[in-house]
Image (cartoon, rainbow, N blue to C red; front, side):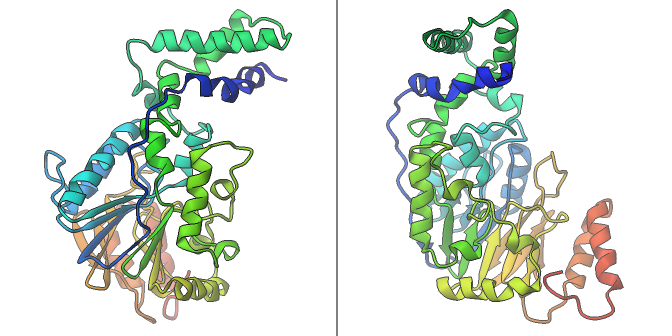
Length: 380
């Protein structure tokens, strides 16, 4: 076993002893809601607090003090608030507060579970950047780090293994920087953020629209919303990489990319899912678009991961549903989405491209659509 593997092998075992017991205070939310007058759906945030606030303000959901101003609007954030950006904690704190403020105004905030939420709960921190750990650093961080290291040393000694070297200690500190222990405590099921995630929905139906992070594959097409949510909640309530099934399944609702990448042969499946849940559309994140809210399958599926976070360089854009119609809120402009059968995608993409003249991906998509000799097929 490598030194890296030796250091990591006991982390999962000893971490439970360090996690503070904080009683959970988050209620389990309903997963079906009648249609409100307005829904705003935001894709993956990935720790970019500034970009998140920008789109919330553009949608008139918060004011300059970041207080809820959305009234009875429902805000749906489809997961992946974590990793890749340094302000994940600020994003979560804002959403937790807005949940309460929106509720008092008879609105609603639906903060859904994405694959990066479950990865953090399960201890998979491959995409967690140093700034995310640093956000948890406090006066006692050095002591917590020492205590964690000593527990690991005792574990090695009890197993008859050789004592750690100075190189082992340096590797340990590199892998467990100051704030790491507090981060892991906070993401335990009893912790501030772990308790919040462990009680969240993975999929929700608001009005006639289904919202989730990845998508519903044929494998899960017949599952009820309640069953899907309870399975993910159960796995997050006792997170263990060895027993987590739905939350780690590539075909599961947090990981499946078929609705974003599949071809026309997937249309019967999409229609079957919509019929099963009596829905008009499925709204998903997880798979980045060319930098725009993008309808597929004649508007039956809408992709809203526009690459909002700075790490992707995407624009401030989100989905708005009003009076049964779908719009893209793109850099403050509300653009109707082509949803009707035969409604061409080209005019919409051309309009978005005028707002993003320097986006190479978007310009490439526009050229592709312009070169088509007939009406643009959906999906592409």
